Length: 219
Image (tube, rainbow, N blue to C red; front, side, top):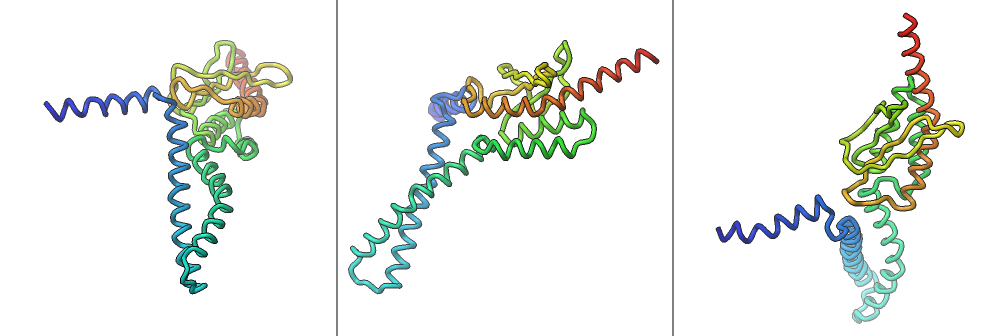
């Protein structure tokens, strides 16, 4: 009973943090990973440089070595932090900070797909995987039928119109990375660009579906 009573609080806190994103946990995890790795890298660099300079210069006074090492670490601190921040962001948010890479990969996917239906499937998979999104779908038609999807749908989702020649050819449906989280301005701008780029593929798929229905009615 004592062990159960002491484990209730950690269990409930874990559920609240992972499922309800208590205390904006994504930002906390991001900063913890960045500064934890930065601290470890800085300490390792300091130790390695001190040992290397000590053996190279054969200086008995460690104050000079410490001064030189501190200056070197100070110079490398900001570039190292920027590199670690980009790495952690890529791990958590995908290629959000590199929209050119996302659009280029999307263009390659559209170029190498055969039918319009396969193109829609490729779009949903590419967007979900490159941006670390739990669910991406494309809706077509007046009834907003799901033509392609990737992942598991969630209740709170964002619907972006896919335009082709100033007409809405479908909707790009995107789930937030975590419940209660909203997309940043950078995310929205990138997702709007993706929806515009994929508008032609959605239009082609819609025309193909309408043509198939017309042929079936003719038969």
